[in-house]
Length: 136
Image (cartoon, rainbow, N blue to C red; front, side):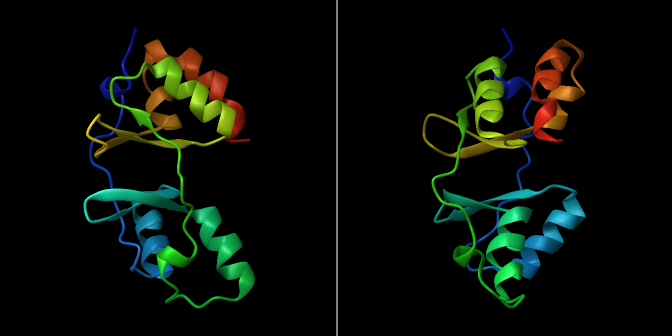
């Protein structure tokens, strides 16, 4: 059985809670992704998504210099790096998320798995197809 650490992306862009939402949006555009883990003092304290920026900032008329801390989601979902891909897929499917932060047993962020990571792996394509409804 494949472990999530075998398919995750290890280079994870993390943003400070004190960064502006404009910076978060620019980094998302540059990296072509919609979720950034938020880190403070070497700990993941939440995540900010493109949806968070739209719903909690733009729709409420907040300025581009609004801090990420004000719009981020806390209590984010994650999986352990030695969890099975199947377990990660269950979390992603149940909560309708396309990107899932991955931590080690020291609770340190070590990667992220995205729907695309599953789709490009021939062995994992059935799992990716099961998750396809998330993108719809």
